[in-house]
Amino acid sequence: MARDTQLRWDRRMQQRLARGEAAALGELYDKFAALVHSLAHRVLDDDEAADQVTRDVFGYLWENPGAYDPRHGSMRSWVAGVTNRHAVDRLRRTGAAELAQGAVGTTEQLEQRVHRAAAEARADYIRTSMPAPLRQALELAYFERRDYRQTAAHLGVTEDEARRRLRLGLQLLSTAHSRPVEGGSPPGHGRSL
Image (cartoon, rainbow, N blue to C red; front, side, top):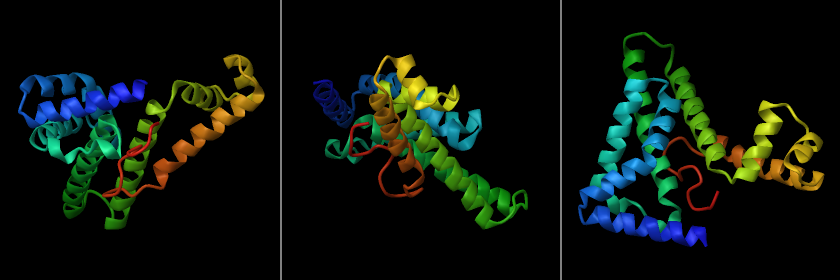
């Protein structure tokens, strides 16, 4: 039921943006600014650059509300994808300028840096967007170094359930490194995380 409510909100928001309602942009900003800034910062590792990407992304959303297609996923996923593309483009432009000045190594090293930053941002987005039970199990296993038995005991679930949550969470995270850096689908686009 919550998914239906979210889809209705997404469609209404798109319609309001298409009508040019400034209040809709403000509402969208309130809802997604932290997400946009954190994803941009994750890719760029620079507050000022992340601030600029955040402004660019919301400018793009305002000018292109028709680019969002609710049939392909949530607005949150779309916004994350737009952010990832803007941040990666900025990282490439900055890296290209550094490459021209001799500040970084080779074009291949720059592309590796871009790919790594984009994959890390996608993984971070996937982790924070996944259902709480999966995220909790992964965080216990990864950050607290607990095995599935300890995770099950801590969460108060069966060992089979703990293994299932860990497996599903890892499957979601594995998609972060298998997606293309540009083009293609944004993280989680087209399916419910």
